[in-house]
Image 1 (spheres, helix red, strand yellow):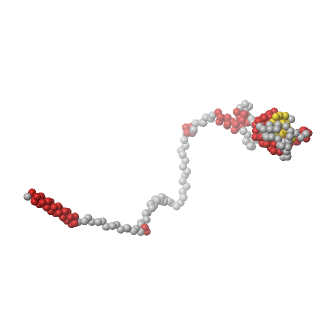
Image 2 (cartoon, helix red, strand yellow; image 1 turned 135 degrees about the horizontal axis):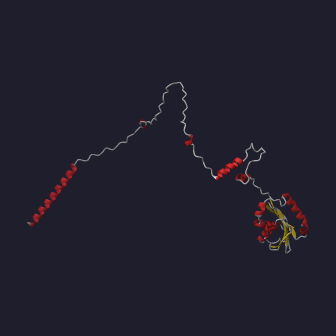
Image 3 (tube, helix red, strand yellow; image 1 turned 120 degrees about the vertical axis):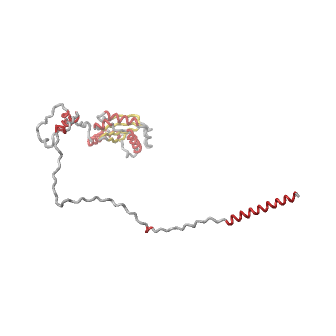
Length: 278
C-alpha cells in the first residue's frame, strides 16, 4: 500500500511539471515581440543648396549735409590772454658742468669769426681756457735710421765681416747655402719661435740692427754669443741675447763638415714694428 502511494505522488509531480513547462512554453510562444526599429537610411545633402551666411555690414558714417554751397571764412580762434607773471615757468637752475659748457661754447669762435684777427676775450685760468688749450702731440723720436738706412747699414756690416766668412768656419745666415742650408733653416725657425719685438721699443719707434757671432758645437747647441756691434738701444740688444739663450739645440752639423765648432754671423734687424733675421 505504501508503494502505491509513492507511485501516485511521483506521477502527480511529473504531470504538474509537464503542465508548468507547457504553460511556460505557451507564454513564450504567444508573447508579442518587441517592435524593431527600422534601419536608418543615409541622407544626402547638396552643398549648393546650403544658404550662405550674410556678413555683417559695417555701418557707414552718415555724411553731414552742407548747409550752403558757399564757402565762408570763420574767424581764427585764439586763447584768452593770461597773466604772464603767473603763467611764466620758473627759471631753470643750471648746474656747474652746464655753465662751463656754455661758457666754452660762447668762447669758441665761429667759422665767420675765425678770420678775424681780434684776440678772444677768455679769462686765463678759467675752464674755458683749459678747453681751448691745444693738446700737445708727442713727437716720435727719430733716434735710429729708417728702412733705407738700415739696409745700407746691414750691407756695411757684411763688407766689414766678410774676411771672417772667407776663413771657412764662419758663415752669414743664408738658408740657401749648399752645405749648411738645412742647419740654418732649423736655426731660423727656432729663433722666430721665441724672438719678440719689445713693446716699449715698438711704441717709441726705436729701430736698429744688432749683429752677433754665434758659436755652435757638433750637437747644435749655442756655446758662445758675441755681439759685434750695438744697435744703439740697450732694449734691442738685450732681446737678442734673451732669444739666443732661450732656444735649444737645433741639430747636428752636416756630414761633410768635420770641425768641432761652427760660427754664424746673423743680423737681428728691428724696423717698422717688425723684426727680420738676416
